[in-house]
Length: 478
Ligand code: ZN
Image 1 (cartoon, rainbow, N blue to C red):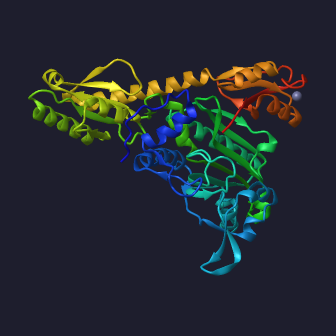
Image 2 (image 1 turned 60 degrees about the vertical axis):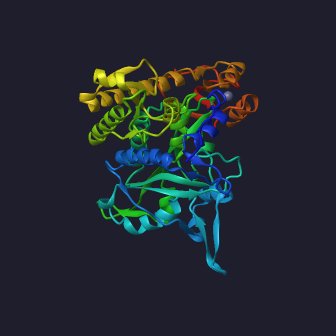
Image 3 (image 1 turned 90 degrees about the vertical axis):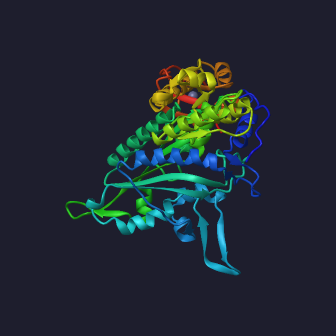
C-alpha cells in the first residue's frame, strides 16, 4: 500500500521521525482534505482496535458500555456556565437541515456531559440506581486553532473513551476518581508506558469540575503528552441537570459525579515512547502481527524451505499467535526492513541450514542476540519470546523516563532540566509564580501531589519566590 523504502529520520529528530513513521508504518494518512482530520490505515486501526479492546476489558469489570448521540441541542449545551466557557470557542454547530435553518442549533459533541446528563436525570430515581458507571467510545469534534497534529491535536478526535459515573456522596465519587486513576495506570502498564500522575492546578482543571487528576507521559523530545484525565465533578452538573435520587429515608438528594477520558493520544504515546530509529516497536498484546516468518530461499531447496515456512506459520496461527508468512518475491533484507518498521515483536527466519537443524532463527524487535526456536514446539518458543519482548520494551521505556525526570532547585536548573525532560521543583502554589516559571523557562506547572517512584519529594523554598512550597511537576507539553 505504501512504498516505505528509504531511511527513517533518527528519533532524536522527533518531530520529523513522528511524521514519517506515521505513514511508513501505515498508521495514519494525513492527506484527507480537511485540516485536523486524518485517516486510519488498516494497520494503524489494527493497533487501535487491540489497544481499545484492552481498555474495554479493564472497564468492563464494573462499567457498562453505552452509546449516546453525536448532536447536542443548544439549550442543553449552554446550561452549565463553567462548562460552556471552557468549550465555546471550540464547538462546531449544525445550523441547517438541508436548506432550512434549524429552530434549535445542534452542537457536534466536544465531549458528552451535556448529551448524557439530561438522560441520567431521567434514569436515576433512587439510591438503588447508584452507583451508575457507563462509558462510550466515540468521535468528538473540537475546532482547534493551534497547530494540528495526527493522533495528538485533532479537530475530529476519532477514539474518545469517556466514562461518566454517578454516586450518592462526594466521598464515593472521590473514591471512584482513585479507582479510575488505578485503572488508567494498569492500562498504561499493560502497554509498557510509564506515566506521571498528578493533580492539575485549579486554573487547568476540567471546566465544571471540583478537581482533575491527569496522566502524562514524556515524549522522546522531553515534552509531555496528557494521555488521560479523571475529573471529580462534585454536584455542579447534577444541580444543572437535576440528577437527584431518593435516599433511604425518602429524602431527595443531589447526586455526585465523575467523568474520565482517554483518546487516541494513547496510540501516539505507544508509537513515540517505544519506537526507535527503525520504526515502531509494539507491545505483543496490541501488535496486529506478533510474529513474521521469512523463508530464506537460497540454492535449490526453495520449495522445501517454503513448505516448511508455511507449516511453521500454520502451527503458530492454530496456537492463536497472530503470524504472517512473508513469501513475497523480495530480498530478505527488504522484508526485515518492512516488518521492523511495523513493530512486529518476533521475526523467524527459516533457511536450509535451520531446516536441517530442526529450528527457526528468531530475532526480537527489541534487540539482543539471535536465538533459535525448535520447529517441533514453535508455538511455545514464540510465546516465551513474546513475554521477553514485552519485558524488554517496558524496561527500555522505564529507563528512558528515568533519564527524563530531574529535580531542580533554581530557575536556571529548571530551564536546563526542561531541555529534554520534565522537572520536579518546590512551588508555593501561587498562580503568579507559575506564570513566572512559564515566562522564564517555557515550562508549565503540570500538577502537584505527583505520583511516581521517580519523583523525590521537594519540600524546600519555591523555585520562583523562595517562600515555602511543595512538590510540583513542571513540563513543556504538547
Ligand atoms: Zn512561589
